Image (cartoon, rainbow, N blue to C red):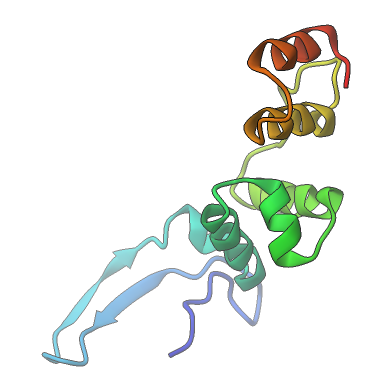
Length: 127
């Protein structure tokens, strides 16, 4: 079975589903159906989201599973965010870069630093 296309292969316009059919009971339902926000994502973007969820949003696990670098995974995440109609990083705080904050939190999670050390490092902006 093929995945539901989200864009018209001829003009690139949005596809609107107007008919659903059950192969088991031969019921057909007609109307105007929306695929939802995720229907706008490409096959690769959906696979990325699935991996992101399976890895519980932990980029280090995604790095291992996908064999990609942190910046590449972050760029792909930003592509997905934009495809969903949002702008990534609009409200990122100045100071400690996201990558450094992530490393501090990962060290905390791994038990390599204490909660107090992590808080101090995050507040003072040091790694």
